[in-house]
Image 1: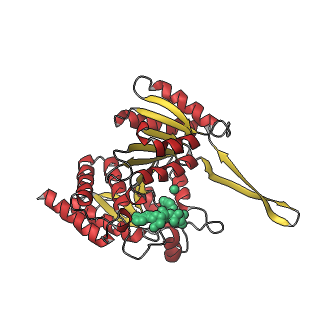
Image 2 (image 1 turned 30 degrees about the horizontal axis):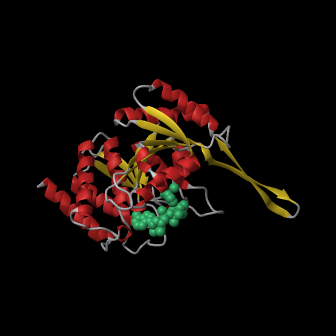
Image 3 (image 1 turned 90 degrees about the vertical axis):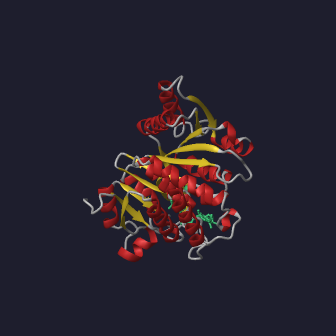
Length: 346
Ligand code: NAI
Ligand code: MG
């Protein structure tokens, strides 16, 4: 859609729980940065049900179809019964097959100098959630069955994404994560396809592989041995939270969902119902996700300015939210960051 100041149209989904608090902070910071985005704000998740009676309203989908670009707050998904995960539906709808989750130390804590990029297959594996119950006797839900699906094409596609990313971003090594000793078909095909793709990059990107449980332990013992992790959907979900833990928690972990029909940027964390509405949420994950979005639309200089200002606010000004051991509220942190940006622009 044409716009008054020729900005880049993008969909904004504030989301649930702490979502509205951290998206508001992010939009304000982006404005101070002089970001190119022109927001179309739409609801989803519980907020979608309240506003439009649907966790994924048609207007929201239409907007993303137009803009092919979205910044999304976390969405609450009821555990057990209730609607299907809206995050998973969005990834499927727009074929967002690649989930990119970089973890980089900003504040040295338990670990220093962590710099690992996780690439997660985003629409296959056990997340297809083809599930059902089998009744036995009087119990209609006596046996639960879940079927995972990995296609050779899907595995090749995500492997190629990871290797291309490595080449473009000067990364050295990719570790393929699997459980091919037990899930020989489901994760065996992933390992096989990834090794096949790796051959095309021989001499440019090193490759090795790890069984997921050993990888989880190695990440705690010696995370510096890893450069990039290439994971199936569920393993990527689990290990990306572990990576967030290595760099100071979920308040500092961004993610990008990238595909053929668009890209959606979000924090790795969820809606954090335990702190929602209290004004203490850390907006840095979503801010860093906005940084990935700036990279994606070809504005790396703005992304660098944003990351530099975030780092200065956390490390030099020592303004931090509670999850990082500080006492700043979301609003106070945001104000400090905007002050930094204005100072760097002056
Ligand atoms: P969560 O990530 O929302 O929270 C886990 C813990 O981390 C909580 O103690 C929370 O207070 C803390 N935390 C998370 N983000 C924070 C932030 N920005 N600042 C400070 N502390 C933060 O995970 P949980 O509780 O398992 O999930 C809550 C809901 O979020 C569920 O409905 C889940 O389905 C949904 N979810 C949505 C995601 C998405 O939209 N992409 C991703 C993960 C979960
Ligand atoms: Mg997760």
